[in-house]
Length: 243
Image (cartoon, rainbow, N blue to C red; front, side, top):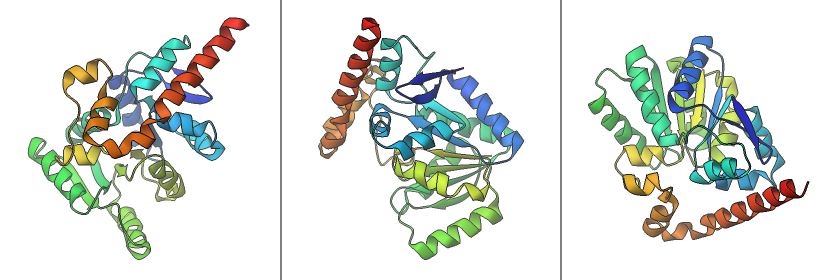
């Protein structure tokens, strides 16, 4: 159940189907890469073959951003629903408590991963979080982190060091053989209470990007990728019509 959008393989599965798929990865045991893809990263991948290669090598790529959902529909390849990184993370946390999976959190400023873990365990007392690590580890600390991952043997490692850096990091560290490694961007900041999601009504009308821009105006340079992405999609659509 995949579509191909601007050269990228993207899953069209719903949230629960995605959780079930990831659950099967944990049963299998070997390394699997999960990517939650937004328009900014897909646009960047158009001129970054290595990034596109990583996206297409991933085991599952979810339609995270509203731009991805819009583009898929515009090009006649609609996905069933949007599956965001934060929502998928929270769904996996619930499944992890139910099935006894071990989680590790990596990323954010010092203290963020630990605070996120505390908040998750307040809501899910039986959740097993075996390690938390901030995203500013030195080279020596990175080596120690990798050793600990081998010893702690988590089922899922959530990597929150920003996209697409986290995707490159996951590929470079796939030898850790963690069953599921997923880039989650700013999700740990949200869970830790350091950042806020847009109100529900803005999520429903796909205006989360605008909410983030208002709260974090320094993001405007990154946001410029969105109109460029939309124009690219329109040009592709026009080419299809002319055939």
